View (tube, rainbow, N blue to C red):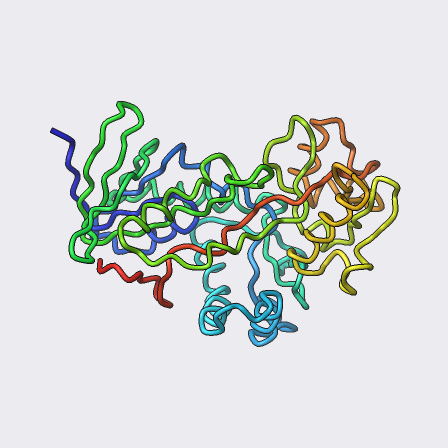
Length: 355
């Protein structure tokens, strides 16, 4: 007979969304957090650049909303975009309460610029924002007596009947046995499917199985045709899924061909800070036109000490492959980065399946 667990809330996925959901629930609720691998092996941990939010008095919500809708070529849901933008500053505050210390400059947030933004509004922790967020959220979750963490447990199927979800069947990878988790409420926070592509910034866990499970359980799925490709993933035979943050381009790094020629001005007047889809397509076009395996990102005009203080993770990773980014350009290619589609929900993240 399979093992049976009972919880008030079952959260499948332990990235920043899953962990934050658990922490924001009442301490009176029993919560199960399910990780298909080690908890710090999800995509959230590897995020570098930061989180966009209106944190400067020279910026405003309407500008952030307009930038977001424009970058999405007006395909975005304006109600959802507005909700996200207006909630972003309080999300930063919640992360700080969990222990995340965002990089400061003269007592203020050090805000960077990324593609499609008309203002500096990206709060970050050097170039390892995801690592800081994940480790702090995980420490907070471990301190809660009402939260139970299950590592190396992979959700197989939802327990549904008559358009209602009662939990999930979950495989315990340590003994290959299916265990039943019964819950009053189930939250699916399993991330995307970018590992379906040859080049990706995501870890091996990003296989979309949570979305597939939700589909089998009767959830409506939407917009899966949209995958965001990050323009700059490190291109090296021994490098796997290592992102070169867009923040480098925000600080003036230039994309160049192996010949040394710049090319982004041919595609968009915003150059390297055009939206990611435009920059990724431009790189792909240049590679195919000229037969190049990659292009290069050049930040070598910056002082070595400045590079080491602002981008220590990227600097050290490249150095491990013999690339001194204070002297040499970084070989990069576009890579699948973000699954824009997924489970269709309302503004409160409710699906069509009762819960």
